[in-house]
Image (cartoon, rainbow, N blue to C red; front, top):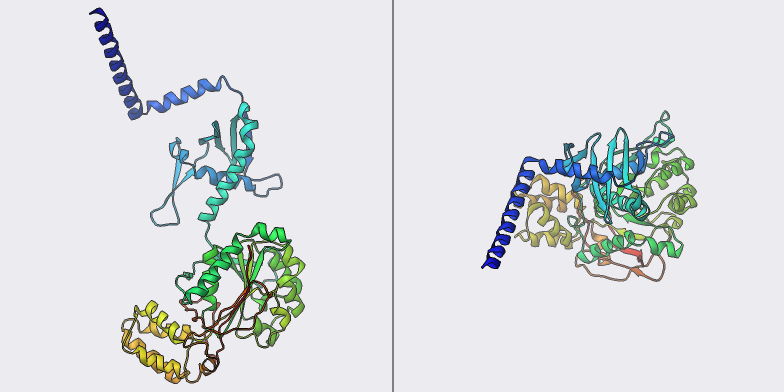
Length: 481
């Protein structure tokens, strides 16, 4: 009997103790006493450990911005521990309803890494790292590498794309020849009208390039690629450039050769471009034929694949546009200077149906057979011209189609005759085309749909009628990476 009584007493005592501990924890958490207890416990712990401090100033001795300071700041602002700090600043983010937390002066942030307790103190323009000496040798270097990788990834997700343009100002230092604005063009590979097989090949080529750093280095080649987009104005070359930039999350450098004073100036502009960017020169054939730039042909060739072009940065794509490449010096078009050739023809009936679906929401209409017949008779307009007609009449799809039909019967007469003669546009037929590039690994395409033009790319595009059209081909040295 005594044994049972003692056992009951022990169990009852345990139950009461558990209830009291639970109530104590609730009281501590609800009243905030738990944080006071934690602080006191840390103070007691600090008495038994030796710490080492590392300062990360915002500026170095030469008053240049310390990149490590920025990386640590980005890393700390991304930690969930910041929400548990005594003081935290709240800011509205770039996205709707987004709230961003930022460090407050003298704020202390605690972090855990590989089982080690690490603290950061935000002092005046300096971040101070506090770490136990016993843990320093084991975790300091891996921890700093971890900060680099996390901040780079966070920056990549948060950064907005920019469009750079070169300016002419004799009072401006050469280091400030580029001006930038946010790049917000909405074009993407999902919104452009292009044959799905061809679109997938282009996307695959870009994706392979972006992942091929080690492969290029193993070959001893510079990690860059170049595209030539040629065809009449208004066929979607500029929207295609925007789609490339959005797909890769690359900045765009729009280089106006008429604002370049000489070959040396062109080199300085190239030196100031960054990695992860598209360097774009539009209407290159016009500059060459009209000699409207002070840059010489050797200067352009050096810009495309010279020593400077190979040494000033990697992970860069060059894009050139032309109305026609028929009278361009073959030295510009050779492999190494141009890797991928894409021809943008005038609109055919297949592309017209894609435009009608996107602009008017029409998958079929009683006027479609009439439109198809007009295309088969050789008439054609650019996707931009047809798109503008549809936008102007978007409230009445029937009226929009009638307007397009009228425009094809007047302005579009005979514009597609050359396409019919070569058998490459209306029926989507394919035939071999001459390969441009290295014999191995070249993929070719003809008879693809025209690219749809949604909006102008910050003045890139000058819509005008062109009186002839050619076949569509894509010639590429396939990226083996």
